Image (cartoon, rainbow, N blue to C red):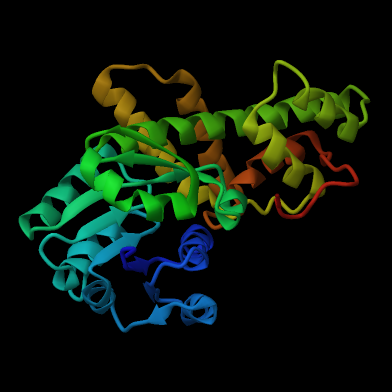
Amino acid sequence: MSESYAFIGLGHLGGNLAASLIRNGFAVTVFDRDPTAVERLVALGATATSSPADAAARAGNAISCLPSPKVSEAVLAGPGGLLEGLPQGGTWIEMSTNGRDDIMRLAALASAKGVETLECPVTGGVHLAAAGKITALVGGDAALYARHRPAIEAMCARSFLMGPVGSAAVIKVITNMLAFIHLVAAGEALMLAKQGGLDLAQSYHAIVASSGNSFVHETESQLILNGSYDIGFTMDLALKDLGFALAMGEQSGVPLDLASRVNAIFQQGKAAYGGAAWSTQIVKLLEDAVGTDLRAPGFPAKLEL
């Protein structure tokens, strides 16, 4: 018999992850402050509840996908939180992006109540989450991972057990740091092509087939060329993740010159367009500075598989 799960946090990412669980036959109880997000999942077969505690009590295990460690702590340990509802021996699967210190501290709070923790941040983008093809980075006990692997694999095409709790936070922060560096680099590359008089669509495809290609160029450059920039991920979230990377570099004595520069660029992006602007709009700083846009026909407004 498959495990039952509460799912808290039904945003761009969480809503798609929860939908994949339902689609694969899992019993899912949901909670989110946005009633529209809840209604979408109920229409797919989820059960709605009045609080994280109630959802956790009904399901026995809980998954969360939230925007910051502060929100994760409130949902886990605050009034009406998961720890009020999860039974001893229940599992909390945290799919939010946290710093290593954050997830280890939160896992200790859960452990004190007899609840085990798996950290399970995901990477690859909202469009892959929608198709159940995103990648999971897992930290925690191997036996606990094995127990919940069917649910993780219902949401994610691939999963990597990185080590104990805290390990997945490290690799997730690293992958996001790389993605934001690649995004700024892709924008600069496209602008050089534009100013060099090249066809941007042909330049996009040539880069994809070159040694300079990246996952970010293949995906996010399409949204830049379309002009929508709609990646489903904000400037504020990018700055949160870059902050984790810079703190990790400082703690471990690793100078992060590129990440520091990219962080400063994202600070400029937030100042120019607001923290709620899509992270891909970071390239608009360059467009505005040069006085030209990066547009080409035939590219989608949103990524789809």
